[in-house]
Length: 134
Image (cartoon, rainbow, N blue to C red; front, side):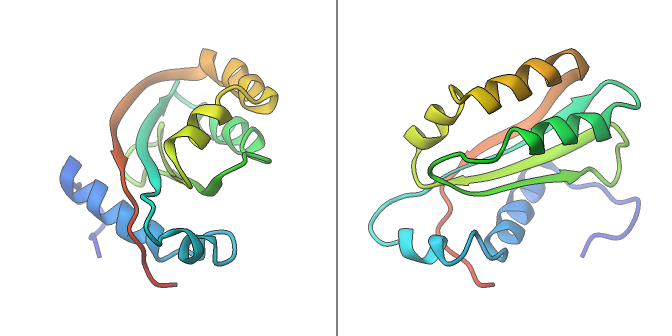
């Protein structure tokens, strides 16, 4: 547990986010079904909204995340220490599914709406989810 006001370094954050994500019940038991011999694909990253636009950015991201084939988890979280930052954690059955999602009409629409209020990008990492408990 991180005390209020404390901050995490990149490595600690990525490790904690991956551990927390793997404890989430990922769309049924899809995670358990897919962790056999295949490597799953994951992404964890920070987006910074223009001042006062975080809630709007979150709305666009969540609206565009429905119906993405191969997506097992898509979690958007508010950064507790920065009122303009959010963290996105994704788990996909494979990298190709993630890449294909970027061409979906609802994802393209969300990107178009979000782009003007994105102030920048912070730390990001590609990860290989390996399992967890829920």
